[in-house]
Image 1 (cartoon, rainbow, N blue to C red):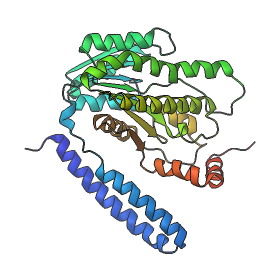
Image 2 (image 1 turned 90 degrees about the vertical axis):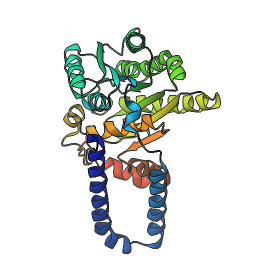
Image 3 (image 1 turned 45 degrees about the vertical axis):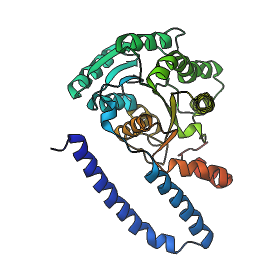
Image 4 (image 1 turned 30 degrees about the vertical axis):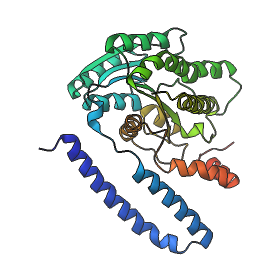
Length: 320
C-alpha cells in the first residue's frame, strides 16, 4: 500500500511533466524566432539547470522521522509551513516566534499532523539573551539537534530609505546577529549528529531592489557570513552542512500586504517554498534557489547589469 507521501509525489511528478510540456510548446515558437546568440545563451542555461536538477540527491521523507528540528519564525508564513511539513514527516519539533498564543496553535496542529513531539518557546530575537535561550531549550527538550532552520525576520517598511540608522541597526540584530549567535550555540550538537544548518535568505541578498535597503543589507550579510562559514566547516572536515536558501517573492500574508499594487512580479506559494527548504536541508544541498529561475536572474545581473537594473526599476509602480 502506497504511503500518502508517495501518492502525492507521483501526482506532483505527473503535474510537473504536463506543465513542462505545456510551457515547452508555448515557448518553442518564440525560441525559433530568436537570434543565434540568444539561442545559445538560453540553451546553455537550460542545459546547466537540468544537469543540476537531475543530478541532485533524491529526498527520502523517511530520513526525517524522529529528526530533532528547531524552526524559527514559525508562527506564520514559511516557518509555519515548514513546521507542518516536518510534522507530517514525523519529526520532533521545537518552534519559536514572538507570539506565544499563535505558537501554541501551530504546535497543536503539528501534533495532529503526526509530529512525534511539538514544543514551543516564545522569544524576541532582538534580545541579547533570547537566541541562546531558544537553542538551549531545544537541546534540553530534544536531547540535541539534527536541523537548525533559521527563518525569522524583523518587521521593516517597504519604502524609500530616509535615514533611519537605528532601525537598520535593530534589524541587523534580528535578521543577522541572532542567526550567527544561534548557529554558534547549536554547532557542537549539530557536529555530533552530523546535522544541517539551514539559512533562509532572499533574492534581495543576491541582487538588491528598491524600497528594501535595510532588509537587503541583512540578507547580504547572511549570505556572506554563512557562505564563508560553509567553506571553513568543509576545510575542517566538519560533519555539519550549511544550506543557504535564496527565495524569490513568496505569497506570505506579510509580504503581500507590503507589495500589493507596487510590485509587478508573481508571488510563489509559501507551502511549496517550505517543502523545498526542507528538502535542501535533508539532502545537504549547499544552495537552494526557489523558484528555480531566481538563479538565472542572479546570473543575468552579473552578465547584463544595465538591462537587469532597467528591469528591476521598471518592475515597480512608482511615481516620484
